[in-house]
Amino acid sequence: MSFRTLFGLLILIAGAGITRAQSAANDSLALAAVFTDHMVLQRNKPVQVYGRASAGERVRVRFQGMSRETAADTEGKWKVVFPARKAGGPYALTVSAAHREVFLNDILVGDVWLCSGQSNMDFQLKNAATGPEELKKGNFNPRIRLLKFRGSVPWGDVSWDSATLARVNRHDFFEGEWKTTDTNSAAAFSAVAYYFGQQIAASENVPIGLIQVAVGGSPTESWIEEKVLARDGRFAGMLSDWQHSEQVMEWCRERAGVNTRQARSAEQGHPFKPGYNYRAGIAPLSGVPVAGIIWYQGESNVHNVSLHEALFETLVKSWRQNLGNALPFYYVQLSGIERPNWPEFRDSQRKMLSKIAHSGMAVSYDLGDSLDVHPVRKKEIGERLALLALREHYGKPVVANGPVIRKAKLGRDGILLDFTSAQKLLTPNNEPLTGFELLTKSGKRLSAQAVISNNRVRILSPPGEDVQTVLYAYRPFTRANLYNEAGLPTATFSISVQ
Image (cartoon, rainbow, N blue to C red; front, top):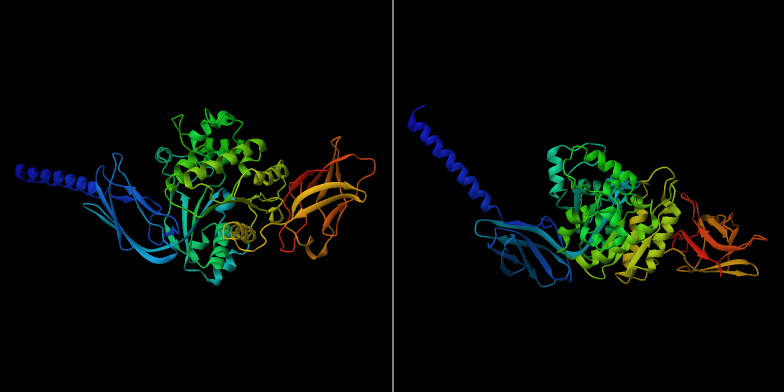
């Protein structure tokens, strides 16, 4: 090869390198991952658009005939805000900088709901009992839009390689984009969230955006900001060495140990690690106004009921501080399954309603499976969550709860139980009432004969026993069957006898 040829080749290589560098610089403009075609923006709240660019770079955003301009800060972050808008669309949005322009199309304005938790929220529509029929009908609402932030890294029974470990450590775990609702997008989406959104859209006649951020097996603490956990001494045991902390469920620690077997860093990230899912999945949404939150999680915290109470209250409070104060938060009481602590956990979830304002709980034990932690009847759960939102958030005159226990009083005719949220107490097909037990002061647990009488439940008092507490649906897997006229079940409960 001649000197002239070699020199020319070097010039070409150098030029290509410069071109690539210029291209990288020119491509520095980027919107946050939540901004894609087909998205839904929250109505009646300021529209925030944000992303990244080169430090100091001027960014211009155009939306609905209005323009906003700003400069990226020293970290490359930028944000503009447009006035709140009513429901409508489709609209377009344009973001431009010196060397690049980004166009987004088919944007709707309506109500956005954040749908989070673990595997029962992640449970796909195609696997639900009613899923195949729903997909076969193909009757999809074009104004329901789906954003599934899915885990980009497998966290099953696999050992991660060095590239995967590094990616997880960068918190580059979730990925996804907005999609219109069709057979493919709906099939892979959360069944619970899908049926929730379908019910809300049918009632309110506005565009509905559903953002799914759920990780199967994830414990509550993984969804709470680490600095929030660090400020509370009750959670100290799960921060210093979480993979050996008894505060973290053993199964979560074991699975994380398999995934991170080849890790060299003591600070290796993992979606079960306290704080991880908050930073990777929730924090990036902190600039996105939403109407509210639905939550289906708890299976990975059943081992420590009192600790979960503290964690759950902390999660709701911290999310509201970062996503919007007083956001409605509707959650699912765990289903029935033959596992220890589940009745106590379900009862604890019920009691949390009195501690957390603007919250609601959908009962699911009657839809459970004695052997499977992933029961397939998800339609009813999504619709029960929707009833809570329709009543509490949208102000619709619907019955959203099953009978709610108010008091238990010892009388001449036995123990009388009064309920609210029930114009009529009933059992399906007028079957005999089941699910009640009694706890005596000496700790004896007795089955109870109960009947519905004058819209109360009457329990025969066992002779010679000093009854202290009435239990209902207090078996891990239960066939308890007290409902109201709306076909909604009574939650698992315990109540002292007066």
